[in-house]
Structures are given as C-alpha cells and as structure tokens.
Image (tube, rainbow, N blue to C red):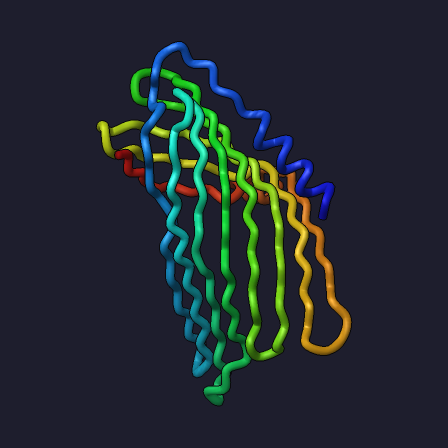
Length: 200
C-alpha cells in the first residue's frame, strides 16, 4: 500500500506547467458523472447508481487540480424478491491535469487520478477499502468561455483493494492494467469517456 501511494505521489508531482501567458490560470471548473441503470431478467432485478461531482481549479496557465466526492451503490434482488446484494461505496478522487494546446480551442491533456473508495456490503456484512492510480490522456475542446467538451481513455491503472468480512479472514486484491486496448479481438480503447466541463 505504501509503495502504491508513493508511486501516485510521484506521478502527481511530475506534472508542471510552463506557459508564458496566463492561460486559464485562476479559473474554476465543475464536471462529474451521474449514472443509473436497471436490469431485469425474469423476476430478477439489479440496479446501480453513481453520483460523482468534480470541482477543479487552474493554479497555473495549463495545469489544474480537482477532486471528485460522491457515492456508488448497487442492489440485486432474486426471483423471490429477496435482496442478495446491497452495497454502498463512498468515493474520493483527487486528480491533476496538464494541458497542451494543439490549435485554437483544441487541447491535449494528461491526467493522473488517485481514486480512494470505502464501501460496505450489507448482506454479507463486509467492508472494503480501495486505493488506485489512473493515468488517462484526453482531448478537450473549448466551445466558449464557460463550456468545454472532452474525451479521455485510461491507458494505465493499478489498485489495491482490501475486503474485511464481519467474520473470517480479510482478502486483499491487487490489480494492474497497462493496456489501453481491451483485447486483441475488438481493439477498443480502454474506458473511453465523453463529457462536458463548465468554467467559471
């Protein structure tokens, strides 16, 4: 865990701005993620939700830092109407980005994020704690002085998760992925996301 935090700290500190003009320095921005889904197969039903608002600030002409704070939840009911899974997770996701201008309002950026998640599964009465590091490049297009459209995809992520049940031994999982493609078969970019960002 200590090594993972050290790697994350080095990655976050490695981003430096060097623009000669003011750029977006002093600008605040908001973005985030809001999603909900429901799947029903016969009498079985599963639902999931995610609310993750993100606020950031350009402390240099082309470098911004932000943090997302939110929750994730999932629930599954079997055909008899009995809940077999019910989990809630609290998420804190600090991030930092470095921007490079390509032309006009089009920018390329590199992002490092350190998602920290603390969850509880009510049915199995277990708790989980996860710390990760994500590196994601992306493109950001400035529409006007208060709106941008961006897209990004994850090229590297590593995480450590510890699950502690009410009784029994705890389980520690380590995950590492440095392939921006999902597989040789589909050659899709990893975790492609598109969204908007509001400036003020």
